[in-house]
Amino acid sequence: MRSINTDGQTKAQSGSVPTPYQESDTQTKRISRSKLGKSASSTLHSQLSDLMREKVYSRAWAAGSKIPSEHELMDRFGLSRGTVRHAIKSLVDEGLLVQSHGRGTFVAEGGISHPAGDRPISFAESLRKQGKSFVTEVLDQEMLPAPTDVAYELKEAPGTPMLFMRRVRSVGGEPIMCIESWISVDRCPGIENADYTKEGQFEVVERCSGKHPAHAKVRYTARAAGTEHGAYLHCDESAPLLVLEQTISFEDRTPFEWSLSWLTAGQAVVGEVTQRVSD
Image 1 (tube, rainbow, N blue to C red):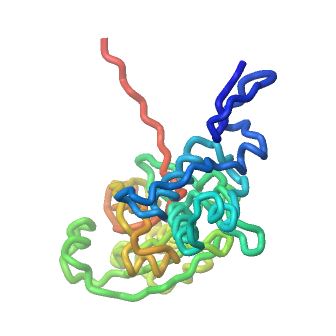
Image 2: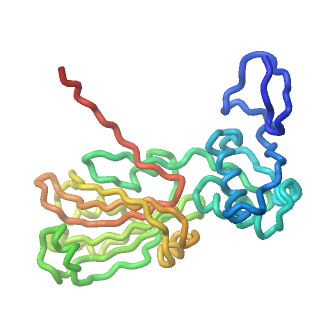
Image 3: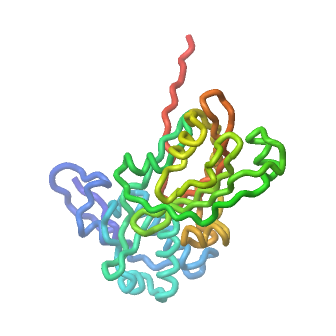
């Protein structure tokens, strides 16, 4: 059996046909040597980003493998260091690559997944179940009058005092999510006094309300980070984020919290869907 390698040459294969998961170290480290089109309408760094992104998506570069160095990429494509660094940073911001000081740049391992369904998403519980150690930093925790749209979601009067809280969770020293919550203190009395660096929010809710968070209405959107959330999550303002809007209720369907959770690239929200088959 014969195949075409990344340089367009024909080589013999022995044994079974390798899948994208079975690339050898030599294949993993190779990259097409064809020059990028300098007359193309897209920028050179975006062309290089596209090429490297395809290597990751096709699994030609396996998860955890080291990609070619900046010098190798500069030499192979005749590009400046700034252009190569810009291309690499784009893929780091997307969560496809990770950089390790003194070691190089690697293809990111499998991302973090969070379960979805009718139940509220507890990110702390999700991370613990995946064996991820995390640190929670509380950036804001104050009583504020509820904006009209928040009050509507929580079935309260506009301007009702509520707890506003902004937290950033980090794994391995890198921020992965920013959670912004509005919580009804009437339905969770004393919740404003909790230490959220030591207690999970749902634990505090149960302790203060005597009720169990049981239902959630969830909406998913994709947004650019913007200046503010880019600063919170240490990413470029144009970096893509997955934003989850949740209205969370007790078992009796009384809502007590409305939140926005901003997730960095490389994370997923996973659920199961059952399709009923009709005759």
